[in-house]
Amino acid sequence: MILRTGNNRTRSGLRAQGWGQLPRAQSPEPRADVGLTLVEILVSVAILAAAVVLIMQALLRGAYALTLAEQRFHAYAFSVGKLADVETALDTGQSLTPHGRFRMGKDQFTWQLEAVPLPEGPQLELVTLSVGWGTGRQERSTHVGLLRHVPEEGS
Image 1 (cartoon, rainbow, N blue to C red):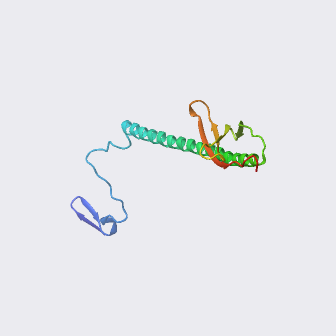
Image 2 (image 1 turned 120 degrees about the vertical axis):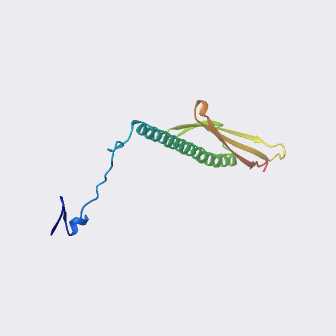
Image 3 (image 1 turned 135 degrees about the horizontal axis):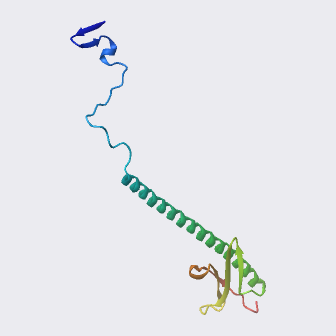
C-alpha cells in the first residue's frame, strides 16, 4: 500500500518504520580524526620502550642473584665436605694441605685452611676454612669455622 501526499511517497509496513535497517550517523561536518596522530604513536612507543627497559633490568638482576646464590651454595657445599675431611684427618694424625683450588661448573674457587689454638683452653683450637671466588671488583668469600677439641699428646 502506497500513500501519496503531495510529492512525498511513503510506504506502509515494516520498511516505513526502519525495521531491519542500520541507523546512519549523520554529521554536519566530515569526521577528521580517523586514526592516530604521529604524537600519539611516538608517546606510545616511548612508554613501551621504557617498560621493556625496566623488564630487562629486572630479568638481569634476577639472573645475577641466581648466579650468586649458586656460587654461594657451591662454596658452602665444599666447606662442609672439606671440614669433615679436616676433622677426620686431624683425628687420625694425617697432615693437611693448608690451601688449594677447585672448579665447580664455570667458576674457579680458592680455599685456605687455618687452625689456631685458643688461649682460653689448651685443648681447644679454632679451625677456619675460607673459600673465595670471583675476579677483580667482584671478589666474594665465605668463612666457616669449627671449634675442635685437641686430644693431649700422651692420651
